[in-house]
Image (cartoon, rainbow, N blue to C red; front, side, top):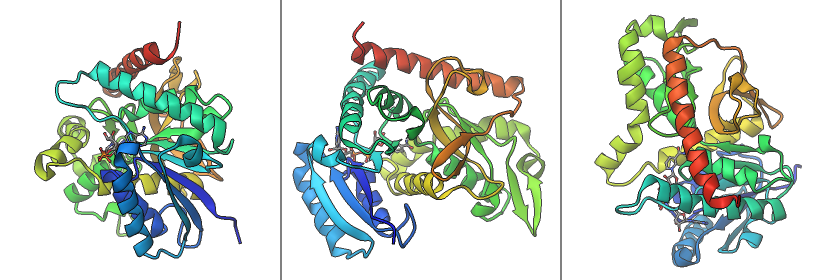
Length: 334
Ligand code: NAI
């Protein structure tokens, strides 16, 4: 019998949080047998929504939820936490500029980093979902110096899942048979969905996506754009941003990180660079192809980029460096 795992979700009463806590109750994070002590952390102004969400969660009578707690305090929210899923963030308000959004979130994630450093398990696994997710993850890690940098990640799995589903439809395959699409860089419109390593299993044979699609112009332009702008397209139709798909991607990310990736399959995760990965000298949170085993993430290195790929990578890296500079200028005193 393994002890229960302590999972904390911030922004738990919001759009994504509401869907996510129910998926967690169903066992999507660590399987149907792992007991979880689930803490929902919210802002004081969302206290009623938090209580309502907890009432529903209790009414589901999920057997794996050993305890359900709700709080608006960081110390109670992160105490002893093994997995922290940071969804809550400041949304972009009317007339708000990108730099104001970066600044507001930098302050939030600085505080959360400090709180994790103080209260969470030293081996806590952190996933940042709240946007700008990559830069928020970098700030969180910076302010939690006693926790290894390798324990901080940002969510780009939703982009991977979107890309996989678009390709599956295009080549009439099952979505789970489409493998190894890579999301490089930032979870933003500069991200690069790359099919150069991707395959499709059909009738027991593995074929390359490039070979099956046989249209590089579509793969390099329309497809990349469709993946990058999918979030916007959903807002237009649903009049609300992606919630269930984001929550589902969170479960996929944590599941693969802690349970392990399948043999021959890699997944995309935003991880903090160490000055060597793919020659990126600066420290940023960049999405790479990763394999996971025993709770450790290994970035797959050695893929060679052609000129097109290099130009796409340069663009998303440039944006991450700009975001980093803006965010750091707010939270690090010179
Ligand atoms: P939402 O506005 O419905 O919910 C956010 C919740 O977070 C609210 O209930 C709010 O009270 C809470 N919150 C805000 N600041 C907090 C703090 N400091 N501590 C605790 N709780 C806090 O937003 P939604 O739709 O759930 O999205 C959440 C975030 O996820 C947004 O930043 C959104 O842009 C991002 N997102 C990221 C995706 C990704 O793939 N990385 C995909 C989709 C959304």
